[in-house]
Image (cartoon, rainbow, N blue to C red; front, side, top):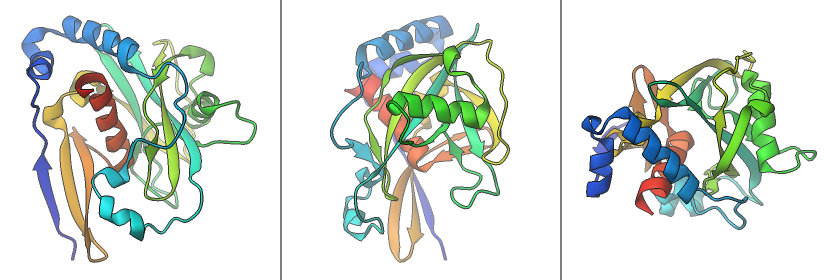
Length: 234
């Protein structure tokens, strides 16, 4: 029988508390967020091994990982769109018919192809294939640290601003829906949780964020936590 526990992660820095206080105003948050993106993201593709991942909360499980051999290169787009009232992040809910991670919330993205020029090309190609957003409508701002999953992927999150004029053409074989979440919600540490579950006799921990009826967890929540750490904690 599965047993799940929930631990809330609390903010500890006064500057973050001030920033995420609604009384600061949307305009102040948006301006501050834009500046942090410019100042703290990697400007070039980060090299070397992943600096964060599923094993951050489960270091003892690395030796039990079922994956062997080199990590598989992958990339996702962290898609931002600025509207009049807020900067939003686009997320997808995967199709319920997929053989793995069905129904889970994720960034658009996937495995690198041999003819992809680099990780940016992978992220933009996959985004176009999955949800129909043209690469020409994406302005890449920078990159987060690579993220390693326990299933053997090294994922590079590519952060980009999307022209609000974009239109969607969803590939229903991969994506069930696309939805937007205010960045001020995702970057508020009060909404970051650490959950655990008993699986195959071992307690495993993972990050999670609940927004309306959506449950964001696993690698996607881990990358959002990495984004928060990069912009506000480092």
